[in-house]
Amino acid sequence: AAVPSSSSSSAAAAAEGEDGAAPAPAPAPKPKFRTVALDAAAVLEGGLMTRQEVRDAQQLEATMAGQDRVLRETADKRNELESYIYGMRDKLIGELAEFATDETKAELSAKLEAAEEWLYSDEGFDTTKSVYASRLEGLEAVGRPVEMRLWESEHRQAAVDSLQQEVARYEGFAASTEERYAHIGAEDRDLVRGKASDAKDWLVQLMQAQGSLPKTEDPVLTVAAVNERARTLRSACDPVVNKPKPKPKPAPAPAPAPAPDAAAKEEGGAAGGAADKEGKDGAAPAPAGGDDAKDGGGEKPMDVEGAAEGPSADAEAAPDAAGAEDAGAAPMES
Image 1: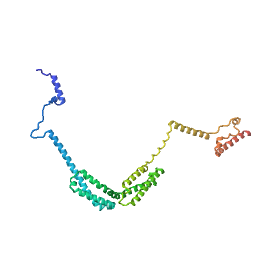
Image 2: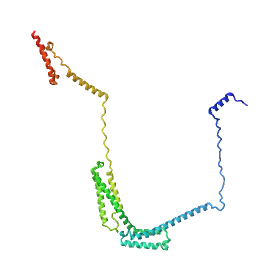
Image 3: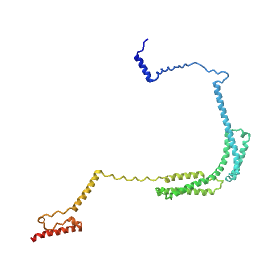
Image 4: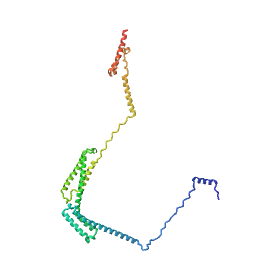
């Protein structure tokens, strides 16, 4: 057997010492599977149903469920007819009495009595859903207008109040002097005022006509008509009332600052002009030319700029003139 060299054993020991553990074993290979199709047939034993029998049973169950539904709906419609007969009979002598004429009461009462007799007969006890529905519709055709008059009478005032509030709101807007409506022009205000006035006139006219009708007549002022008029009024006036204020005009952009060179030149020019003016005002006048200046005689020329500045310049010039006269007089004595 070959004996490992000392160098290889020392290298392996060094590697194991660095890792701190023995190397992990290699993973085991995954098992492989193969699918094989087998020829087999399902066999029902012990009196179980075949597939066809199962399908037939499911169809029978669905049919029976449908029959139960029809029977239930038929019974519900029969109960609805029965409830209407008893309920309408009580209403005709109660809350509906003032909304039905005597002829209408007599007609409806006769129909209700005939429907009740039929309902408890053999024919009415065992019939279809459609027959019950037809009987109920015949009774409702006579009783529904009477019930509608009662409903309109109970809900009309609320609808009228709502429309009147809308009219008052738009009239107040047209005459408003509030700051939030200051941007709305006179033309738009007149539009709102006119729409509100038209709605008010329409309501007043129909309310007068409705007030002259007996309760047994169909109303001319219906809740649906009042609500529709209010909706039309809002759709015409709300865009004006909710018109947003115009956006303010943007502020003008500030003038650009002068360039540094131009500012320095302006400051230098102003300082130079002030210095020139100061030199002209404070400097002594130059001597006049000619023979008189050489001899030192004669009068000193008048400082034009000094004279322009007023009496102070004249006062300063007076002693100089006196000195000049004395200087000219001295040589004449010798």
